[in-house]
Amino acid sequence: MSEYPAAMQLKKTHTRRMCTRSTSIKSNSAIDFDRMPSEILLKILSYLNAESLLCTGCVNKSFYHLSNDNTIWFKIYSKSFLPKRKKWRTESAQESAVSLNLPELQDRESGYWKKEYIMKKKAAGKADLIQLLKPINACTGLPLKTKEAIKISGLKWMVILKDRNGKQHVLEQTEISYNETSVTVYWNYLKWPCLDTLSGLQIFGVTPILLSDSEVHPKNRPLQRSLISEYDLANMTENAKMIGCDALVELYCFDQGLLVGVWKKSEIAFVMACLHYHQLIERSTLGSATVRYAAAPDKAILDDIDPEYGMHGYQLHIDLHSRGNTYMCGTFRSLFCKKDYIRNGYLRFTVISYKKTAQHLPLVGNIGLSWMTGVFEGNVQNCFIMDVTLLDDSQKPYWCFSAPVNMALSPKPSGLYQYLGPSYYLNYMDLTGKVHMELVWMEETNEYCIINLVLYLSTEKVNSWFGTNY
Image: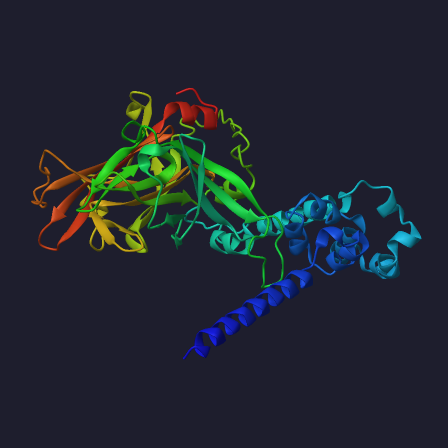
């Protein structure tokens, strides 16, 4: 029995020596890139594709300078953009470019061909997207293939939350829902920063700097951001409107289609962004990390012949939906306004009239705004997303938005004898105009029916758009 402790001690000593030896072998076998000659490192980097090379440049300063090597980037550039004849002539030059002292390599600053390659790749990608977005939907006046363009460009959206100490919380989208004229992006996370500590929220469109044909992409490939909108969260009750609630969450709606779900304990539950297709690709890709994309100002097209120019020929496409459920989708043509209807700085356009019962439209399904997180889900009644696309008489998008809205119970019952149920109304307003909708609940069919829909367009916007003076 006395020999047993001695044997155990000997085994422990042997094990300790083996572990020390193994650690020593591992440390000796580790590659020290800092001591490796730059010629060997350049040879290794020459086997990487453009995406991997850009990622390598983010490691440290040494790798950044090595990854800017003109010889490597000229080889990548020539394979992609040089004409076939020139490619054939420079194949041997690519292998021994330094020894041949090519002017393209020797007379350029470090990273020149890298910049040229990135610029041409971006231009080629932009040209492909422009071609893809050319076909137009006759009903909406919007590109037919916006969904395909989003997927091909690798476009995604992210939210950055800023707290009062300057710290940033970057959150990638968790879910996306495509609609006929808009896309709804969701951020459903279990853990969010404390709402009381947050000062602002920003929404960015994010795209890869390079679009590779390969199906395998580096996990942390270089991305570029385009600022879409930003909001003040420090005073949520002042900057946002509560449009509804259920047993768990309250919905706060900001301008430009942002919706923040807040738990009853005053913490963020989820974030939702409603993005209209009109110029969505441009807004999500052509801005910068600090400056939003600014579209070219509209040029007024004057018409001295028509005395009511800018007051007729409008076409409205409206879509009411929530998370894949469409409650109403319709197109209304030949909308007009008479000069007598211009009041208080607005032109009035009646889309659905009280008096014309044939125009009244029912809403299909159980009306409510669906939400979910990683654990909970719910439905806030009488809320949904409204997409409005208004075209002028030349079929050009005049007023486009996607926004969460809610129906409120009207204090007065419907004055129409055929509708005996409770009445509701819906109002939306921005700088371009207002939407007013009235509905009634029909108990016989268990559905809502739109009995009045009116658009109000700002005379200031109409005069600026058409060059008129109403």
